[in-house]
Image 1 (cartoon, helix red, strand yellow):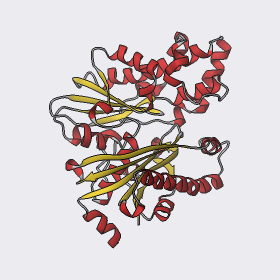
Image 2 (cartoon, rainbow, N blue to C red; image 1 turned 45 degrees about the vertical axis):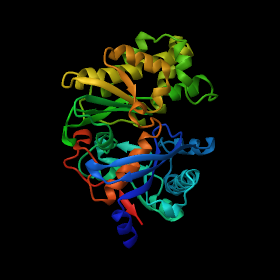
Image 3 (tube, rainbow, N blue to C red; image 1 turned 45 degrees about the horizontal axis):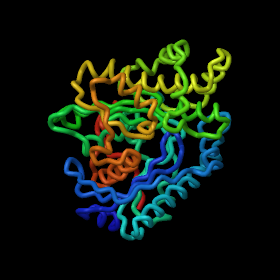
Image 4 (tube, rainbow, N blue to C red; image 1 turned 60 degrees about the vertical axis):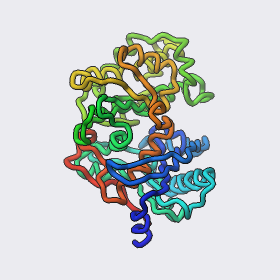
Length: 388
C-alpha cells in the first residue's frame, strides 16, 4: 500500500494511458505528465505512439468477437497475451521518451473490448492489468467500464469526464465528436457543470467503412485512406435508407453500441445485398461513408440541436483523416464550424489514450470518473481496479 500512497502524494505524476478501440488496429500509448486532479487537472503530453497489432494477432482478436469462432480457452489465453502486449506498449513509449519505468508513476489501461451488452448489464474488456503491473513494475488501473455497469450505466462513453476537464468553455457550448470504430459525442454546455454534460454513441464510425474496405480490396487495404475509394462512388439511396431504418439511430440517449450492432456480420450482409443489387465497390463505400455521416447528423438533429446552441464541433479520432467523411459532415452541419481537437492542444489520435491516463489518476485519488448523464448510471462511481 505504501507504493500506492507514495504515488497519490505526488503533486505531479507521469502516467501512461493505453487504449485499443473497437477497430482493434493496435495499442495507442500516451505518456503524460498530470498535475492535480479533478477540476484542477493540468496535463502535458510527453510522448505518443501507436503500436499496430501484427496481422495474425489481429485475426485472433477478431475471432473473439463471434460466438461461432470464440471459445472460453481463447478468451482466457488472450486476456494474458494482450496484457503482455499492452505492457510492452507502455514500456516502449516510456523508452521513446528516454525515461525508465521507475520514473513513471501510473498506468491506465482500457484494454480490448470483446463483448459489450449494456442492455444485459454486461461488458468485457481483456488485457490483464495484473500482467501489465507485473511486467512494468508500475501501479496499474484497468477494467474501467464495469463499475459504471454495476451502477446501472451503459459502461460507456467514459471519455466525457475528461472532455469536461480539458475542453469545457465558459462562453461557448461545444460538442466533442469522436469518430473511432464507433462514433460518440460529448456535449459541453457553456459554463456548465459536470452534471450538465450529455454524451452518447451516435452509431458507426470507421467500423463499417474499414470492414467494407477489407472486403472490396480482398484485404489489401484495412481502411479507405483519405476516403479515396468512397470519393469515386455515389451513395446508393435504396441501401442508405434501409440502413437508416436501424433502430439505434433513433433510440434516445443514453445509448451505446458496438460490434454487436455494426460489426462484421452486419457488414457482410450489407455487402451481399450490394452484390445482389449490382452496386459497385466504390458506391458501396460511398454509401457506408454517407451512413456514418448521416447517423452523426441525425443524432444531433434529434437530441442535441433542439436543446443546445452549439458554437463549434470539435472532431477527434481516426475519422478526422477521412476527407470524404469530413466533407459530408461539414456540408450537413453548416454553418456550425467543425474543428479538430488538435487546434485546442489535444492530439486527435492520442486523445483516448490520454483520457485513460487521466481516469487512472482520478481513480487513485478516489474521484468518480463516470458521468451519469452520459452513461445512465444511477450515481457517480470510482472507476477501475488498482493493481500494485
